[in-house]
Image (cartoon, rainbow, N blue to C red; front, side, top):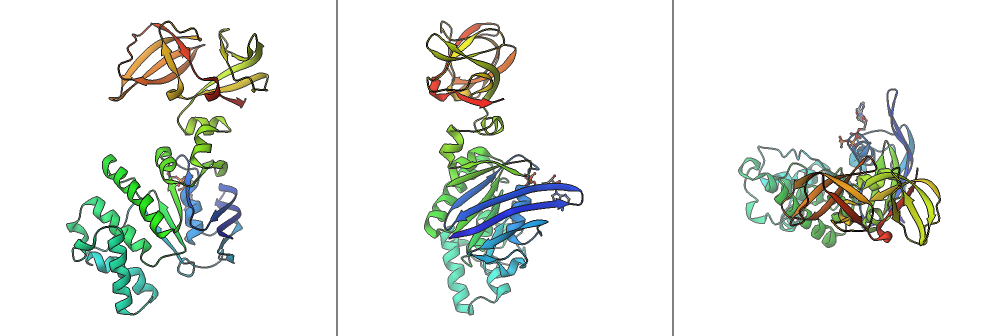
Length: 347
Ligand SMILES: Nc1ncnc2c1ncn2[C@@H]1O[C@H](COP(=O)(O)OP(=O)(O)OP(=O)(O)O)[C@@H](O)[C@H]1O
């Protein structure tokens, strides 16, 4: 049974349609990410699951029970936001106990046991008596996480919970979230606009675009088989180039507007106008390469890598290389790419 089932959810605010019919099953114990650009409706969808927002049409089921009209406290879910809103006058353990108290779950002793277990899960048991202001941002984040998991909700909803943390802490918390999820097996819906975060954390990614599901699949599927230009560009920020597929001497080739061609995999059956998606990290540059020639426009030094911006058939083309690959502006370089890594998308 699906743990969470969303059926044809629509949401409008006044005359603005924000969600256009979202259907989604989340399996028990699954970690799913709602990924998309700002304004695509991720938070609205999460708030609908939580019961903080009503639907305009459609329904929400949790473990087979229709909860569409139930208030948040009757849904057995927990939500953690970007701003974690701890109560400043309460200690860490009192903050974590708060949802148990509000819902009258268990005796005082049972509550204390649950609080201790939740604090241990997020490795904060030694700071139980501190006040929030005596903690670092990352520690406060963990208190909020402990508070969210203390009642072992059926569904854990996380809305960009790591976006206030600096890069290093964020990576640590990502690893911690994965471990906690593995240990507790909570069904989790995670909202993010960060593709790397979605790729590294999720069992499944649901890519949203303008209030609709653009594509869903495992991180590997979404990364290596994007089905649309939007998906290719959003995940791994691919280069999207207009081209025409024609039959070359050794199978299909993509012909660009300047007449240059790029070899495609033999099994590509499309012919005619298409969009070719080339990932930045899949392109190799070689001064003497025999692939299509592109002209170097700029180089951006990224530390471990270089990003080159080149021009191919009048279109900008970005390529990531090792940091010791040196070309100068204006230089013409040959491109090569494994034909299997080239995605052909309908135009
Ligand atoms: N209460 C509201 N009243 C009117 N419009 C709203 C309301 N809440 C959200 N919206 C609009 O709905 C759209 C989707 O908002 P939502 O917050 O769900 O997007 P999001 O994908 O989570 O974006 P972000 O990553 O920026 O939070 C936006 O255009 C937003 O302005």
